[in-house]
Image: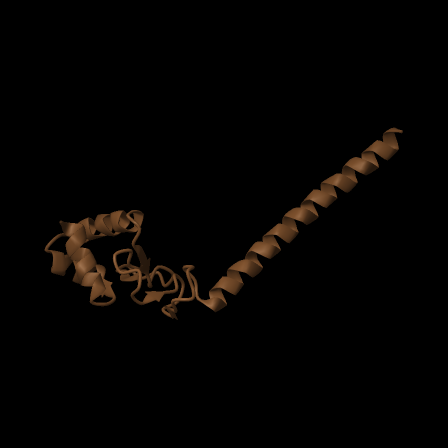
Amino acid sequence: MTGALVLEALREGPKTTGELAAAAGVTRNAVLCSLYYLDRAGYQIVNERARSGRVEGLYRIAYDREVPSGDRTCLICPKTLGPGNPGPYCRYHRRMMARLLLMALDAALDRMTEVTSDDEQQQLTLA
């Protein structure tokens, strides 16, 4: 029941933990538990203040599984995603994620070639 009230309040727009608690008539801790279970149920709920270090979070729905044709937003920024974008990120952040992945793969391949060249040098010295 609390999750439904929290979800209904979030559909109106971004809300702080205190505002969600007042709308649902429960404690802030109960709101946080509801947000956790809503996220696990397929609703992508984003805390916009997570990186700013503030005590009270400002939450918004990035993806509402009951309204898949509605406006979806990027998981990182509040940019609206169009119907041609099935993923959770806007074009800019999708490219950034791809670059990060390529850099991580490149670093892993470099480490593998270093290990291989060290093994080859050890075999040459043993022969």
